[in-house]
Length: 99
Image 1 (spheres, rainbow, N blue to C red):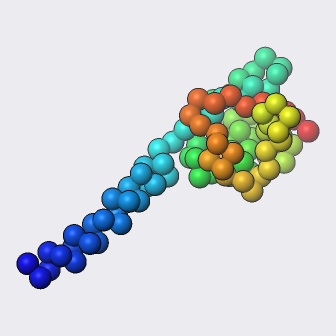
Image 2: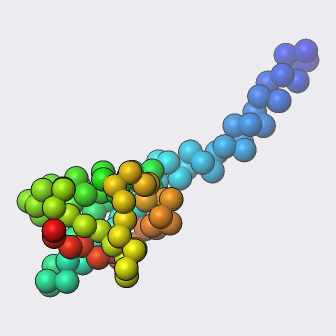
Image 3: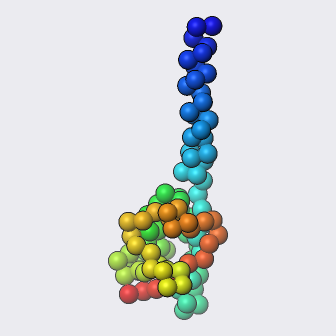
């Protein structure tokens, strides 16, 4: 019973962080519209950066990542920010432009 109390106290932080690990591992699908009649669906992780997303798009489109601009309305997304920091969720539509 002396060992039971510490193991219970160790279990509590794991429960507190369980929802965090679910977010890290659950992939999302982002829909990108290039306004030229093409839509691309890309599977990625919420903790991926916009730069990572551009590399995934580049693989699908054949366009170099540095020539890709992703935005929503007039908000141009910066490469080093994560998708979850921009509150980009599963199924969300973004605009894809070629520089």
